[in-house]
Length: 188
Image (cartoon, rainbow, N blue to C red):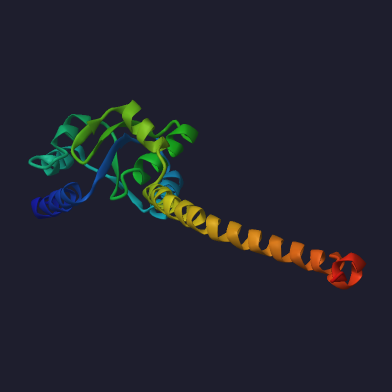
């Protein structure tokens, strides 16, 4: 590979390491082209990317970035999975590794913090960023809806009370005795 091409690859990888939140380093010995294509398709569907790397070039690319601690993981047939979503790449890589023993999770980093295999698996079990946002919005909306229900409750109770008195008065006026019905009421 010519030197200019190698520099382009290093710069592209450095751009990835400088702009992404999560990087998962994997080994993929024996992974067929069809299996690698399937993994890439699953990654794209989740908003992540899977890329085969040359170890020496990847080690040069991580130098000086927040992912510099990953340099020792680039051995053998290495590939990286990365995403801006702090969970997506880990979730797809871990799920794929469970079904296919040709893909091995070596570790990774989230925002520069090193992750071992267990950490990547734990991260993969977390809900996605969209799910967390939806839960947060639900939690924020919940007190407001409860407050509205509490504030509306006294008005509703008052309306039901007035309606009950009104209905009671209507039924009572139809059967209540009048002065004309009472002969003792007209004694003068």
